[in-house]
Length: 329
Ligand code: NAI
Image 1 (cartoon, helix red, strand yellow):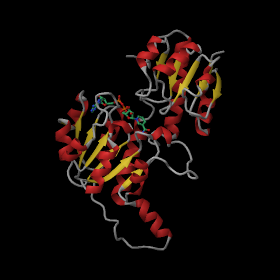
Image 2: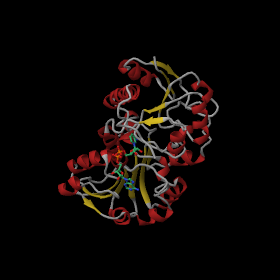
Image 3: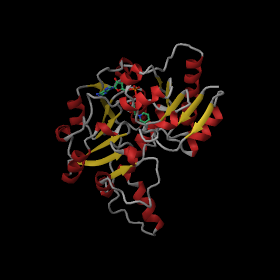
Image 4: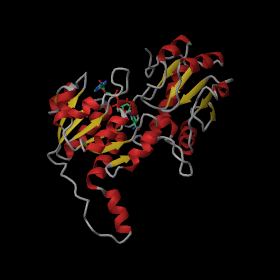
C-alpha cells in the first residue's frame, strides 16, 4: 500500500483526508516540512504538502535519497516548490488546481465589507453598550471602481460578486479572458487599472516576475486613500512600502489574507508568545488594516474538493494514467 506523509496538518485536515481517503496509508505530521525534519520522510512513497511547506533544491535532494516519488500539493499555488529540482530528482508534483474559487472570492468580499463598513468595530462596540456611529462611516460599493489583478478562477468569481454589488470593474491580466471581456469587463494595463481604482484586489499567482509588484513605485499610482486586498500570495507586496503608504495616508485600507513571512506565524496559536516579526506587529496596530491568516480557502466545500482531488491525483499516479494536475517547469 502506498504510504503518504502528510505535513502541516491540523485537526480539520485530518478529518477531511481520512474521510475521502481512497486506500492509502496516511501518516499525519503537524509540523511543516523542513530540512530539520526531512528525515521523517524516509520509508514513504509520497508527501502531501500545503502552502507553507517549502521544498527547495536542497530539500528535494533529501527527498530523492529518501525514495519519495510524488508530491501531492493540497493547494493551487506552487511557488514554494522548486519544480526544476523536483524534475531532476524524478519527483512528480501534482496540485489541486481549483478547489473553490468562490471561497476565496467570497473571503475577499468579506474583507472589503469589513474594512469599509467596520462591522468588526461595531460588533465590539455594541457588546460594550456603545451605540455611537462615530468613526464607522463607510462608502457605497455601488458605483465604486474596483481593479482586479488577475482574472483566473478566483478573479472571475470575484468579478461576478462585484457586479452583483454594482461596482465598476477593470482588470489587468497578461492573458485576458475573452468571455469576461464580452461580459463587459474592461482590461487595461496594470498602471491604468491601479490608478483608476478605489479598491485593488490581487488574484494572480506569485512568480519571479511579479514579486513585490506592489511597492513604493506602484503604490504612488494608487488613488489616495484607496483600498488594497491581497488574498493571493504575500510576496506580491513589499510589506515595508505598504506600511509607509498606510502611514502617509496614500493607502486608506489594507486587507491581507496572506503575508510574505506567514510561514512563521499562520495556522498556529501564538497567543502566549512574543511576536518577533515587527512588520506584522506594525500592520496589526493600524485601525484600517484587517489581517486573516490564510483562511480564504477555508470552507467545507473547498476542504472536500482538496481531499478528493488529492486522492484522485494519487490514484492517477498509482495507475500510471495521464497526470492532468501535474505542475512542471
Ligand atoms: P488561476 O491560475 O486560475 O488564475 C491566475 C490568473 O492570474 C491567470 O489568469 C493569469 O493569467 C493571471 N496572471 C499571471 N501573472 C499575472 C500578473 N503578473 N499580473 C496579473 N495577472 C497575472 O489562479 P486562481 O485559482 O485564480 O488563484 C489565484 C491565486 O490565488 C493563486 O495563485 C494563489 O496564490 C491564490 N490562492 C489563495 C488562496 C487563499 O486561501 N487565500 C486559496 C487559493 C489560491
